[in-house]
Length: 335
Image 1 (cartoon, rainbow, N blue to C red):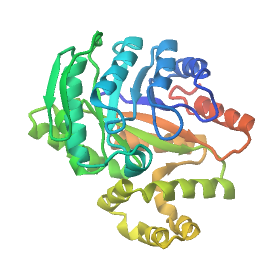
Image 2 (image 1 turned 90 degrees about the vertical axis):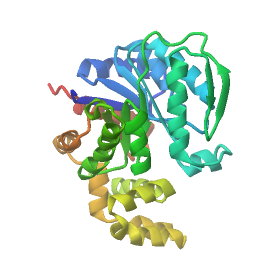
Image 3 (image 1 turned 30 degrees about the vertical axis):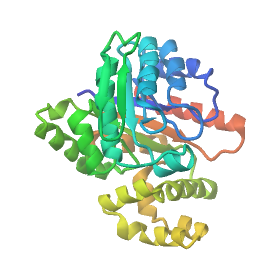
Image 4 (image 1 turned 60 degrees about the horizontal axis):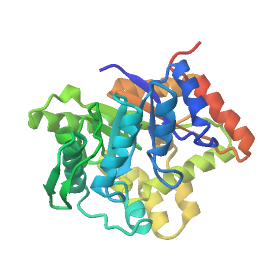
């Protein structure tokens, strides 16, 4: 499978409308894809509509949440982007995390692996244009049919952290979306996906492995260091990410940070993150160092790497300059 060098969108500091020209430049520079995210900014489908109309880039959601949208609504949203970018859209789905599902959307974060598996099974049939009657363990659908099903097949990618969800990706997904892991962690995660695919009678090598890579483009300094530490601390105290890093073997390294967080000592938690953990999870340094680090992920088993660029720069004008400069500097086709 060819290696793909992509971007995570939307880019910080730019409006969605501006992403049309940004995407055209990215395409000229050699980026292959744009993969969206959905946390507390914009939804995951809107950026892809802009990019899909403006370019021939492949576009993907990373991710659309299986709890915060009903199954039929997910199918509708996917069909819309598939019409804009026929043959160029990947639907990435996942369970998200407890804060997103429960605290922000009033749902129940229950049986995530089953919910994702059943959503993928429903979506396969719905996006193929079937009239779907589905009776699952986590939801039921009675007689839904898309009026305008996609003209091209829509690959379904599964966001996965620990073995249960990684196995779901291998068994029912066209791809697995990884996140918040080090390059050295990649083989452990990929092995679970490929083994599950083989046991399910599928071609293990046909499962695309994608990953959002966290790239900080600031020069070294106290402000950048604090921003990166806060970012790591905030994420790795979310239960699903804490459990993920326990599985990856970082319990001893991150134990002091988790203990401080549980005591309510936020500053202590930020200070307790080991430097090695930060260097493993956050890509930073010179352009050459960042590029080399991304290539380590690709060599470790990632097929498609989408770069999530961040800066702690507070000035809006300067932030835009830094982010755009990074897009140009980190192009997969250096000039």
